Image 1 (cartoon, rainbow, N blue to C red):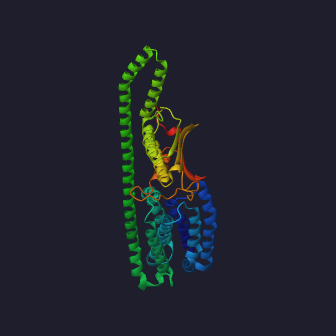
Image 2: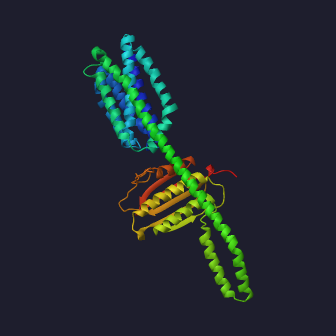
Image 3: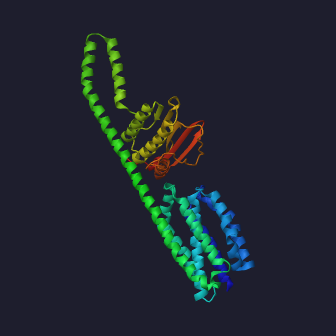
Length: 429
């Protein structure tokens, strides 16, 4: 009947991988991640199965951390997008849940199944897919959002899960398997009960952080909308003033021309053009995007920054909410970077243009010489306060909603933010 035991171990090893891959964020695309995982973990699982057949479950249970846990930890650390607390918490979470299921089914089989391994196999066949279904249905989406948005507090949670994993591993197998130590079984059962309760507390705390993050994002969006509406109102007031002034300008020009003062009339027209340009503040035809650009051009002018804007878009329908988020957060980050530079070094350029089926946005600003950001990574902000860490991640999320991508990197003393969004996401007229 040991074949049932061996099948249950094989099933458990595969599902430990599945649990982790459901919850972690790889730095590679899905196909490459799957291929690398198969190449690295396939032989490792095979090696542990061979060890199980040669040395038995009791021996392999004692060395499982060395033969499976640590090698898989190193591999997934290399593949994972996260390298610190978020990764270690996710890794320990998957391993601890799997070890919990293994321990529970082992105890049930020993006391209820007569060590025929049938209850062990059936229990694992049911519990692993059941937990994975629950993870996909309720946990995966908010958990991935948490990893994206929450940067603090993961180290403590990772340490707690690591201690639980070590505690379960030791209590299960040392000095012999727990079923051979009936006096210690009550304390072990208490650990098995306490672990889900602890994880429930951890996820409740993380969920509260997620709700707080969403609330702050909504506040930022509302503030952006408020700024845009205020700027639109200012533009409308400027236009009304221009219309009101046009009557006086027309009378003046008519008087100059009737008096034959052509040169004076031409000079007066030039003055009118300068005044209209100042009043209109027109960077593009879209009133929402124009409002954001006007707001930050004024902010950059106050900082003494040299700013150039090349906005090659018309008056077509655009997903202005997401594009305004991209522009405002990108320009806010640029302003923060320029504040730390000497005034003569404050330079920034903003470009928006079409390239086939994509709208391309580039914000390029001078930055500290010691700042180094590789393409594909997001730097950690040094800002303190309620908006800590939201800027570039918000840009990335807005680009993703439009079927696009965001890249940022440093080059020749400049920080470059490139965003491309699909024109197919634009509203249809």
